[in-house]
Length: 289
Image (cartoon, rainbow, N blue to C red; front, side, top):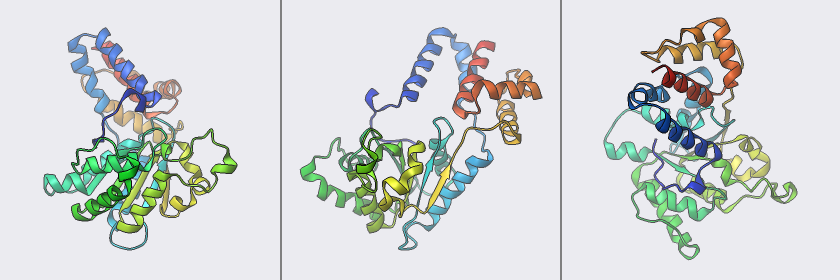
């Protein structure tokens, strides 16, 4: 699912910056034929059990949103690289196709920047609906909040996903005593949108979201579901995931990793992390191409 707002280098996480550097190194190091053969490995996908639990939770929020006055929402947290952003992309891709216009509006996704504010979220939502707005000034915030709510109603949007949602909360450097129970302008805006439109909201972020009930109880009370994605332990779920993934790496002999010893070594190397695993598998294929 495409996030529509432009991103500068300052808006990227350290892991995304690292991903860019890895990609730049690959382009400098490997031949064109190797890149064409191996880079599609980055797009291999396995719908493993904990991932599908999160997808099903999103589906429930989507189905109930705007059907009842009760708030519908969830927050999905976990370590970096466990596939949180992929949950929304997978869910949106699974929706029955209607028209191109409807498909683009039923689920919208924005990204919370560092120290996110209500103005930043309002601008991001407006851009989802085609408004050519780069920034929202404080003196125009209130009327543009109303425009976002009207757009949600008119376009039939049922769910909004907010990636990097940990940025919605107070900075972790702020004293806990002063931050406890105190929302931000960004979370106040989300609460207002939920109350006035009955839209479903899904937050995706780091483990900081796990303490949402303590840090922002007003928002937490409107998000009825809490899900978590974790790195794999070395167990049957890891074995099934790794075998299914490696089985899709067509044209490359990765049989060593399919043995019991290979799968155990592989888990130790990538520490059960999906993103690290995909990066490692791609690098192996680049070397073999």
